[in-house]
Image 1 (cartoon, protein in one colour):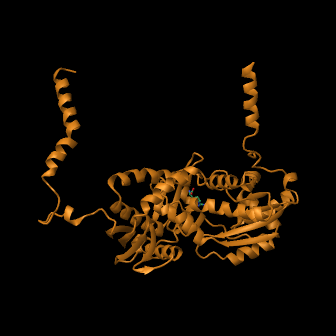
Image 2 (cartoon, rainbow, N blue to C red):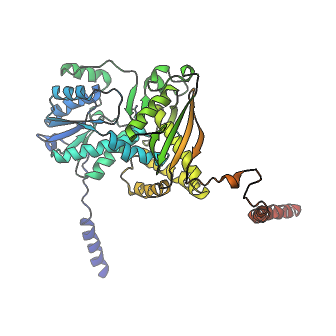
Image 3 (cartoon, rainbow, N blue to C red):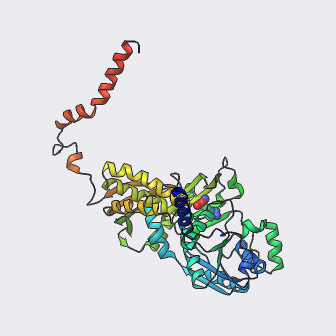
Length: 434
Ligand code: ARG
């Protein structure tokens, strides 16, 4: 009897659980009719076709949002004009460069973030930022849904969607590429019908921001073939790079780069400058066969001159400052950080936990690193910090050494105790034929 009463209570408790909307995707026409939708709009063919298609398909109003995260040479004015021509109710252009650098790129740098040891995560880092602003605008403008140009095969949908509905569980998401299944030819037919300008078909799919450039598709889908030279834009072919090496000196304060070659500058300018200098020397080309979250392996080419140099410098300085135990553990933490960022788990509290450790270590990461850039290579050639655990008098082989060499007899004896014992036992057992 008692048991039955208890079960009833449990069911009631469950009913009082958090109210999470399950109807996130594929909203119906009725749900959207006359309402507003925020579209993350790049101005390219895909999102321009979407802009029109959503308005037509759902009889709703469109608000377009274009974010400046440091895409070199992008004309944001033109994108805005294009959006208005396609009948948007409102258009927003947001300059997010500072926010991107301070809240996404610098935490990644403190985590020496390289997914699978190679990819500096520039595309992955920008997605939660874009999603956050899409949600802010949706809430301000009373929009019921957001939309974006991600395919159903990539990681970006994972990152944008999880961030969006973590911030607003009631938001609906329209992913036109998944909904409509239009191929490029069909998109062009649709574009012609609706007077959407069709840009020259670019060979590659490109995603760019301050931290790097991602290039996929076309010839790059054959991972056994060397990428054609036309895939690269930010980096000189190392063969044609200057014949004289160039030195750069980066000053870090609490894990953040604050000066380049002695000149103090803000993060955006510093990254832009290093991108140019390192790019000129052919530094930062990455050919990566990577594991997508959705399961497949994909071949991606990256150009990340600034990220390559800064991560290399930061990691070197951190190593000079950390104890051996801190450094070994931090590599595990850094790997987890890179994985979660890649996998769209930016909003997962685990990221806060990882950041707590990373920030704590970085409180001491202050100093200067010197690098040599030459024909596609960046090499750390010097580091200096008041916090470094390097001690000349301990390390030197000169007579002034303060290292107590006699103490090493006792140390080695105890440190090797179990190794010595294990070998002795093995020998003994083997003799007995065991
Ligand atoms: N593979 C990278 C990632 O998942 C880049 C994705 C965007 N790339 C592109 N070419 N559109 O983060």
